[in-house]
Image (cartoon, rainbow, N blue to C red):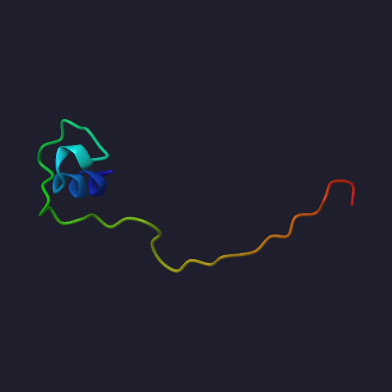
Length: 52
């Protein structure tokens, strides 16, 4: 959420995706770490039809 607000702060109001009363997050505020941290492993799981 903070990163979205920071990104929106640099846009004209008509292009912003958020509305908030948070005023201390400015366009030059450093972004916070977010997303998946560390190594990620994708595992495929094959579904089996019911009754088989």
